[in-house]
Amino acid sequence: MKTRNIFFAATMWTIFLLIGFRIFQLGFRVYTIVITQKILNGTKGSEGLKSIFDELTIEQTISNILLAAWIICFLIWFYISYKKAQKNSRQHFSFKPILALFSLIIPIFNIFAPYKIMHEIWSAENRDPSQEDAGKRLINTWWFLSLILVGYSRYLNYHFQHIKELKEFIHSEYYFIVFYGVSIHYFFALRKLLTKLNYEQNYRDRSVASVFAAP
Image (cartoon, rainbow, N blue to C red):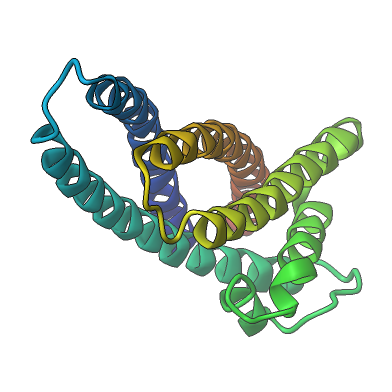
């Protein structure tokens, strides 16, 4: 229980940092569009472009570090939770626990496995039938947004990989604003889902502990 809660807390902190950073990125992209538009119109010198591109490089590096930290923390929590669910429940499980640890990074497998694993964790841990549908809706929202973000990010990487004109650069920034907006919604949905699951997991742990502690 202690290890799971540590990685739950770490996952929640990385989600909090990512939400905050995504909000910053939204603001910075709006600023970038305004400055670049002024340069394009001739009301501002082009010397500001270099600082903008340097800042975008730093921004991308920080974003990658935060995403890597979140993925590591989340996948370890995912593995521990799936292993615990299999230990506590007699329901049918589709995969071995270790596969949860790599479920987001194995090609093809990552299209459907995390969604199925999360459903099985929820089914094993949820004790309140009235919350069953609410939990499943959260999982569906989380996974729908996951697929949208993956597909959209690949489109961005492909379509705006080689930008040659300022107009095209400004156009790409609008697409990134949409991406960050959806990302914020995604992380809020995931945060709500994990909070609900963690409550159920800790309730089960407390119930088991009280049974063993009873005289």
